[in-house]
Image (cartoon, rainbow, N blue to C red; front, side, top):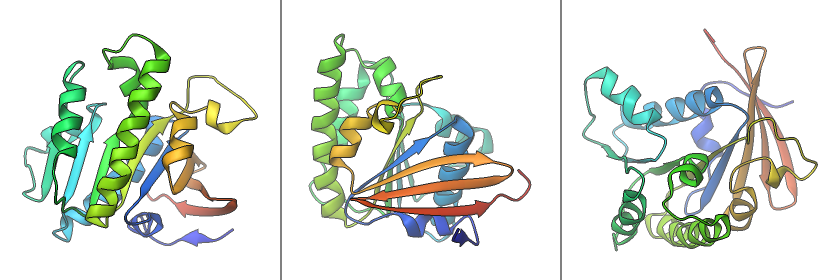
Length: 203
């Protein structure tokens, strides 16, 4: 199986100008993947926008006590999500090196919309807008979703929050898991499937 040699190689997987979905088997997968990609870009002076519905990244950044100038952090709460999305997507000339939306799992929990079907329609609208947003910036948008607790299904799109909507709007899907200090990645692009591994140091 092909192997990645360094955590920063994870960024090279992502496609510019499109939506890339990271489907995580557990939160630690998200933590390692995102921290590796974001820290790599920030250290090189690249522009990062983090739309933090989950609040994980906000909390970990605040603990460090410093806010990099090239990091734009958006952390809406509950009913603020719609306004935050509208404000972000109203940017007519976006310029960034990555936009991370974390996570769709939390979106479903905190969205003020009552009906699940209505949440899906709203999510589909936002993803369509984000797809155009990525094209304007010629940069990757990384959408994160977590595995639904204890759910196992032959159809993988039913295992992750928003799976079917993500499958429709994403150019690249990354199913990620960690086992025996190794991150295992299944890259789905159209009908092609590629498997990659990254050995995790000090994990």
